[in-house]
Length: 298
Image (cartoon, rainbow, N blue to C red; front, side, top):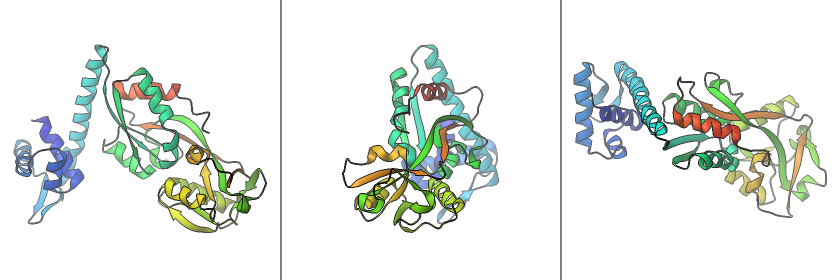
């Protein structure tokens, strides 16, 4: 069995189209189609449901082969990493899914990794908690940084990085002179928040609900930059984690006040599949996570 053919099946499942799958793995469409057909012949089962329009999806057998293919290729990569580590030359590539609110400080983790292992490269991908869970399941991500309280993450190995704390950011004309504000009073402000598909928004809505108030949300964005753009305009405030304050430009027009009554925190951490043994790259990443210093940002 050709391992490359397994990677073609993974690409086909991901893209749902022979042409796009072939392009993603840098082969011609006929070559990829022939490889899938050969794999079906070797295994003696149909892997793909084909229509005149192309691919309808994977068969039940195809989904099972897909799961095995992902694990097999992951194990092959881990073997290569282990052999390189034995030579004192650990190198490889990590795909790290990160929730948007952790992106501004994720360099604390990647810097700690780079300082010890300069030959490991990292791609940081902005992802929702749901996308991180799915990426770790289908092995399109090696690790993620997300909220540890999310029940979808319970089956994953976790290492806490920091506690997320909240502030209100807005113009002085909207926030006044106080150093703190209650959740109840924050609900009265014109707010721009992250969109409802974000886990951060779910948490914020829960805290407003616990305070017995409905926030005045007049704008939403699915990106932090979109939220901050509205805040900088002076017409909106926002409830944000302290981790994003480094993205704010120095401005006398904006104020940052702590959210009180109640004080709330949420643990954010590194998540990865609890496989044994861990791949050398994940071992290196977890060691970096223990060394990383997030205290200045939270």
